[in-house]
Image (cartoon, rainbow, N blue to C red):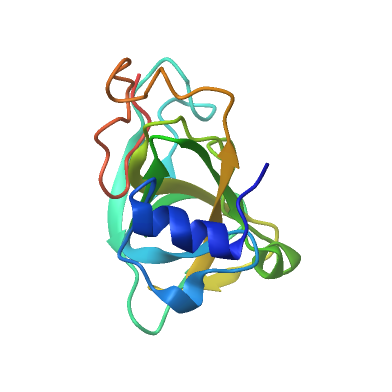
Length: 174
């Protein structure tokens, strides 16, 4: 079961869901719109042919200016949400906004699934099929919450994964 608008608000008020900062107008029918931080990182090749997944990422920090920043096909960028969003009771999930997808911008390559207990900012992976201009503080995606069969095992308490304390843009940890 995916939580709907009123349940998201109610569960947040009870403390079962963490969304900080919280803007009431960002609550949708069954998700919460999250916004893009000003901090992003460009990912570069770490070997001659491309990216070797057994080696550390090669990245360069950037700031998205208020007037926006163009990103281009064949580039990989990582950014993060401003909001910390998660729960000890529900499975938090991330999805890109369909409007941006229709413009050719993908904001998630493989990290849409959060663990119960994850309550941090979300790192996003950007790539596009056409040049796209991105802006800081723009509604970039949405987090939604799914009922779990159990919440006895919590990420960050029972398992200290690579990203349990991430805050902001977090590159791959090997």
